Image 1 (cartoon, helix red, strand yellow):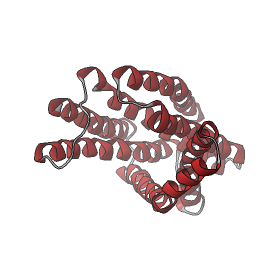
Image 2 (cartoon, rainbow, N blue to C red):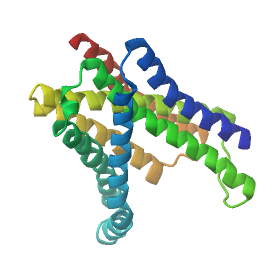
Image 3 (cartoon, rainbow, N blue to C red):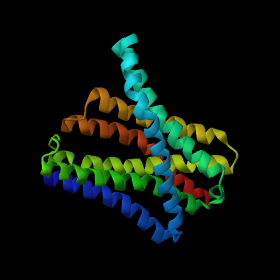
Image 4 (cartoon, rainbow, N blue to C red):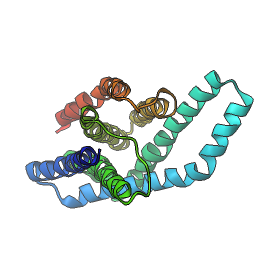
Length: 237
C-alpha cells in the first residue's frame, strides 16, 4: 500500500513538472507565464475553498432534508461542478481581462494554461506523498491502493492538464477576439466534468478498481475534447 501511493504520488508530480518543462524548452517561452498560470490556479481554488467550506455541508444537509435523495443528489453534484466554472473559469477571465495577460501570444497563453493545470498535478502528487507519511506515523487509516489502481491518478492528472489548458485557451481567446461564447463554452464544459467527478466521489464510489477505471474511462471520453481542442488551437499561430 505504501509503495503504490509513493509511485502514484511521484507519477502525478512528474506529470505536472514534465508538461511545463518540456513545453517551456520547446517553445522557448518565459517561465513567468507558467508561473502566472500556477498563481492563478492557487488564487481561484483558494477562493473556491473559502466559499465551499462554510456552505457545502449545510447546503448538502438542507437539500437532502427538503428533497428526495434522487433529486437532492444530482442538484448537489451540479452545484459542485458549477463552483469550478464560477471560480476557476470566472477567476481566469477576471485576471486575464483586467491585466496585461490579455496580450499574451499563443504560446505564452499555452504556458499560462499549462501552469494552471500542472500546479494542480504537482500539489496533488505531494498530497499523495503526505498521505504516505500519515500512514507511516499511524495518524490516519487510508484505504489500500492496489497496483491496478496506481496509474489511475496519473492518467487523471494528464487528462486534467489538458482540460485546464483547453478551457484556459478558450477564455483567453474569448477575451482577445471579443467572443463571450468561448468563455461560456469553457464554463459549461468544465462544470460538466466536475459534476461527473462529484457524482463519482459522492454517489458512485471509487473504492474499487473497477469503479475507479470506469470513472476514468468516462472522464477520458469527456476530456478527449480538450486534447483535440488544445491541438487545434495551434492553428491560430
